[in-house]
Length: 172
Length: 186
Image (cartoon, rainbow over all chains, first blue to last red; front, side, top):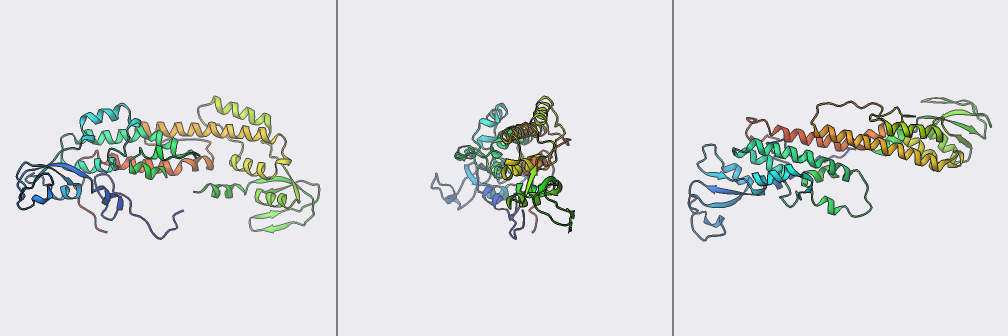
């Protein structure tokens, strides 16, 4: 019964993020592979692999989501974002083949959330990614439902650890 | 909704008891009860029947549907049909559980009845799961399920609603050109 005076803010809908939602804040810490389109003078310390003073144009590095979203411009003068492995064609076929087998927690605990945010970055594969997310969830639904509604006497952690954080919230 | 809330609602159902005390008619907010005469059967709500039984002031008579042959027929019918069959009482699960826990000495063949009711429950829950699964898989817009009891709906309500909410979120990704990342002000 919701008679509590503390209502946690839930994650945002689709491509939106809720500013005050803890899940969204943690989600935005995930790193994305990024290619710089212009040089960043005197910011060499951001990139651990080289000791250069500046970051020249065309460097490949990893930036967290919140920074990438802020720097991304439609005219694409600053950054271009690549898709992480898990959202690329190869993995998408794995998901369509059998969604239940995959360990979504290992793929990044915020698979669905991050996938929704990536759609901001105007990749040509956007609609495929969105479809794949939906189909993966639907495929895993049955397994999640069955395991959440039965009281197991033994430890459920082996099941729960393969779930994405959003599915874990459903599992409760 | 908690299962204990559903059980609370179930306790309003009427059952027949045979009291061993006498009392005039009593006037409660929910309705009138009585008069109680020893040896004569009277209809009372389940909560009162259980209370009297625990104080050893009555004998509970099992409801008409709580009979081995009838339940066996119902179980066979449930297994044969794909849809949900009409149910003996809207709160059959709770009534069975409460009566068998507190008054099993008044109910003939209590163990068989327990097994039969559990079988009926399992079959119905399995059908419910199958139905929810196909609903989600085919992303249908609406479904109709007849003859479901509150307890069964309650088991799946929270999970199904949360999943549908989440699917809505994922589906809203498919519409391009929705507002591009303007953070809302709180």
